[in-house]
Image 1 (cartoon, rainbow, N blue to C red):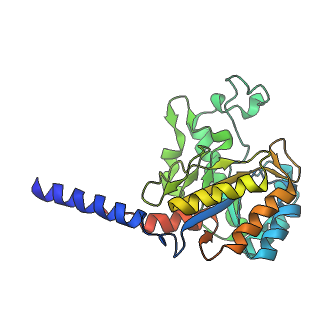
Image 2: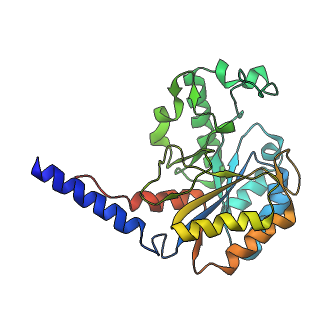
Length: 265
């Protein structure tokens, strides 16, 4: 009993001290992951060229069924060669359609009509598809529409071993020892100014947290959109403050955080 209490106290003290370390994120004050959903053409045309020009790398959550993926296979492959993360957003992007505000969900892509087996098969098949592009087996996942359950079942838990982490849609930033790798929070961007985006980064810097941005349209391409000029203000700030901010693909941030969790014995 005494040994267990001492071990628990050690782990708590380690976690608290480590989380308050001002250079906890790979020698930086915070970590920022730039993630982009739905394999949009604007990601290839507007986002990746700017990221590459600044030496920054992003994470692109791809759904194999979307035209922006199917019509640009070679360009996504080139993005992976250049260090960007190609990540799993399922084959058909199913979302729960039997709730208010989801009338736009097609019956064939209604997650509430999926079996758990169908969903997990779709996730596994997307991993295989992405491997044909980048040759990698380590992968992260993003919940389509942020929906984590089929009925009462947390479907990701059944394939958790196939992924490094899953990105969710809760607007939150966590310190390195607080992260739930099955549902990492992110900030969905829609219409914010560059100054508002930068304010989120400054909050992460001040709290030694990880900040995950969730973008759809950038300069168009989606109903959820941020103006290209405002997006680029964020990227310029990140580039100007690389001494304090670790900007990396989501998978690298998750792997680093996992490696620095206090170990149970």
